Image 1: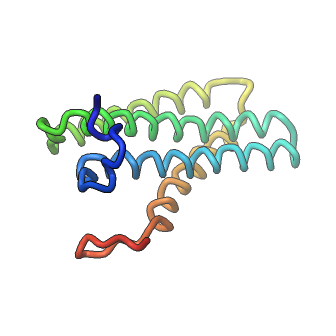
Image 2 (image 1 turned 90 degrees about the vertical axis):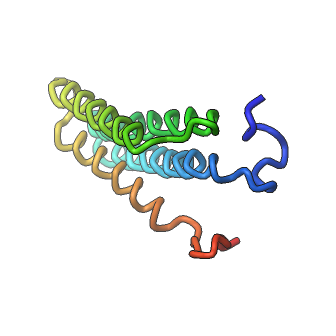
Image 3 (image 1 turned 30 degrees about the vertical axis):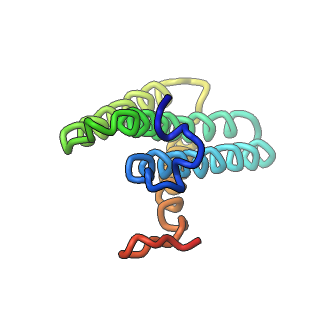
Length: 146
């Protein structure tokens, strides 16, 4: 069984390999919140086409973050083989290619509004960075604010 699935793992000092995956999951939740909230607001204000377009744009950001989450989980499952700089940069390259490719498909669609797709993706990226800024306070000595 994977070490991070064992009961009490987070309390026993095994957090060094799990923290990146937990942080990515936290970011994913923030982006999902943004996606649902913005699509609901735009659906109520302007109609389905705007809501679908915002949903598509925010979904692109959500999928790319989900890819990074799976990469972090993969690295946390193999504690003997830690992530190297090359593997991290390769994961970011794949994320960028995925985002640009999905954005090109969404912008070529006649059903989606390009401005709304861009706004949805921008809001998803903003939620990404806000989740990093609003997260728990981290101190240099390792004691997190609880």
